[in-house]
Image (cartoon, rainbow, N blue to C red):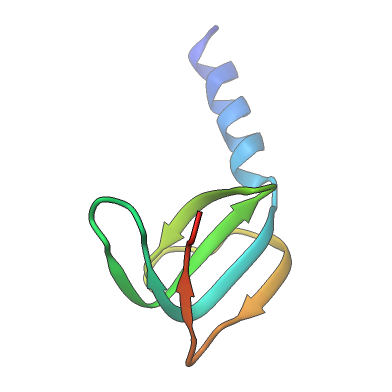
Length: 77
């Protein structure tokens, strides 16, 4: 594939909205790092977490947004 085609495909996927965006809560990741992100966001597509975002990150468009200010958001897979 050529570079312009790859870029176009990347931009198309990046602009596709996530299904659910949980934002503003205290995010606790259950990965090896056990990160805690105050005021962060979690992007979900289908049954998969696609991103854990810090407050400074640009938020993706979402079909549904859950405002979690004052709440813990923990993944218990």
